[in-house]
Length: 609
Image (cartoon, rainbow, N blue to C red; front, side, top):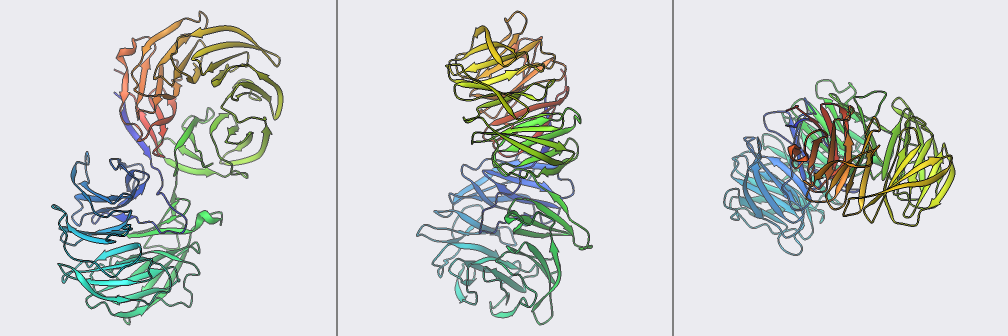
């Protein structure tokens, strides 16, 4: 049966003008972050060790480990908090509707019995503290008039809760049961993040007015601030204390992270400014940070996670990145078989190496959106949501010259002839465009609605699939198409067609959940009854030795069929990707790579039965 060998995780979902929260495990080097409906648990020591929780019904916003590390509380945009086990199959313990709007931050009490959550209340309460097992309220939180962005629980007795938000206030509550004690209006803009030091003796708030202010932990009085001399020049989005409570890490929209030494008189001086290597664009603004044991972690607006070592801040950071949006296409480079390229519609192409993981993004000069992606040796061909096809030369890790070809209609599907790589077949709504190099050699209107296409590697034959479920086979002579045969079997629009590597067979899948393998010479059905998906088939892939075909569907499953066995003896990977599978490829006989709506890429190991 297939087993999960590697997961290349998605990156934290970010939003312009807002900080994001990543949090760490109290005893190990795991961190938590969210993307879409998923909560991701990532091990900083081994980034391929990823565990993903996908049970939220709405977009997840924040997650935290309990003080003993056994439970995780995660919250979503609808105001729900779910409490679930941190290990094995993440069993759900409790679920509470806490606020009536989006939750922006939550924190456990040090004894692990209470949780405080804050966010947007749509006119009702903006902060609530409750018992983790029963959900009963522990206190009244008045004093905020607008969305509360961050909250913190004092990690030592006597318990205190502090909150901060978009009304420029920092509020201090005593308890339990908690009640309002005092409020500070020292900031002149949104207060983005507030955190207690690990011993509870002081807490710090950082704001969009570029200031950081330090307060006494027990009484809530202001006692110091971060010096503005060489401070941040932009909004400070997040702050995190070092484990010994003597230093803090801040990140800002000015694209830098700073480590501050907190002196005896409770004022902060910059000890080191960390700059992350990047292109210098908007995507390099830093929006999240965490000081996790010996690691300093920062997250940029583009989602790149940089990991610095606390002992040696001069050393350049380890950078991890990936996709933030639905990964729609996968390609395996033939010249280097363990290299996988994946693209998401926001125009990001990421290169992965099997066994290593992230190995860089391909920077294109034109960052256009991507709908289809195909590769041949040394070249990437992409199409987006405009009328252009891009042909981009690939030189090692970098993209070279890029040519765009305007074909007059939005491309539906594109396929390349691998043996004569300058030939490309592009289908639009009702016609076919043939490209040789960057020239359009013919545009043919076929007079029916086209939904999928494929071309043989030598460029002599094409199969066009229609909205009516028919497969039409055309021979290609020069620049013209001649219809040779029409195959009828599908009962829904054809969504994908692929030739086998030795071109003796081809497989097709449709929107009505059925796949068919055909023999090319006799044009007969070779493998039938492949009806095991419960929704549209999005993608399909052949194994290199033509013995297996894999299909991926909107129903989140990947099914692998063996050609010489009946379809009922299939191998199924259930729940391969939350939200549907959109890309599939084999890297060798035993490995299938899949990608999907959850922005992750996964490698599955097949064990022959």
